Amino acid sequence: MNNNVRPETMERITNEELAQQFIDEQIKAIQAQVQDHKVLLALSGGVDSSVVAALLIKAIGQNLVCVHVNHGLLRKGEPEQVIQVFRNEMNANLVYVDATNRFLDQLAGVADPEQKRKIIGKVFIDVFAEEASKLEGVKFLAQGTIYPDILESDGVKSHHNVGGLPEEFDFELVEPLKFLYKDEVRVVGKQLGLPDNMVYRQPFPGPGLGVRCIGAITRDRLEAVRESDAILREEFANYGLEDKVWQYFTAVPDFTSTGIKDGKRTDDWMVLIRAVNTTDAISATIEELPYELLKKLYERITNEVKGVNRVAYDISSKPKATIEYE
Ligand code: XMP
Image 1 (tube, rainbow, N blue to C red):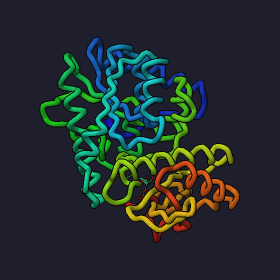
Image 2: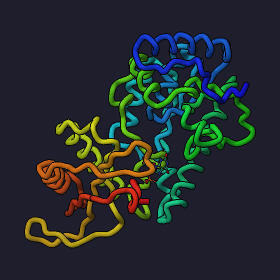
Image 3: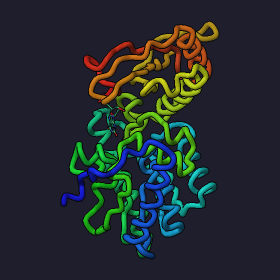
């Protein structure tokens, strides 16, 4: 039997009862697999790794070691939420690594998108591997692989995830979600008590805000991306669009334009607003945002975000455009 094929008898997890049944079964399966060994998990704070963490905490408690690498490209409040939910509320064994300087130093001056992605992926693996090598008795690596990952690739989460750990890390994998679809992962996450804004969050690329700070990343422009994104998310929530729009974010290109503030000319950045709907991310259409919301975003972003004098709303579909800018 191919153990990468979802069993035909497996019922779709659509409600609390089925989610609890899945959780109870997985706790037993995880305990049987790992016994009293330690398990390592790269906890990004995304839906999949968060659900794996919550499940393993229930199954093996302190024997799960979560490593949260802050690459400096996370959204505002994300690292704090990971610490709050997992360390403070769930009492997880959480190693928090602020590697912001290391990432940003390596990325300095690099404008090519693929090069940026490669650097982010490589530094991530280096940092994670260094943390892993400090720990003793770790025999297993937990991964938030879900069924679409198996269907779409070779089953190992690509990109900045830990699929590419150095060979000396000879871990056995623990992948409790590998037969679940995304909607089922969310039902299970909810049942495990994770907060709604973690369970129902919009997709966020592995390289994070790095690909939204278009061109070579600088710290000040990265802050403009992070702050404008936080305002966008806040206003989407105020307008009831939070759960309605599939993906929404801001991006800041690497050029300035003339503006005027307090009677003086400015030379500042432009914030781009992107809000798209899709089912598969292969094609996408824009959400037609209310003009009142756009005006509010223009006012808040230009008033509150340092170094910004313009806001533009991108009305491009995919195709011709892609969802992200690079
Ligand atoms: P595009 O820009 O190709 O994006 O239309 C489609 C979806 O993929 C996400 N995306 C990424 N996710 N690593 C990721 O994990 C990446 O490098 C990456 N680039 C794009 C994007 O946010 C959208 O949901």
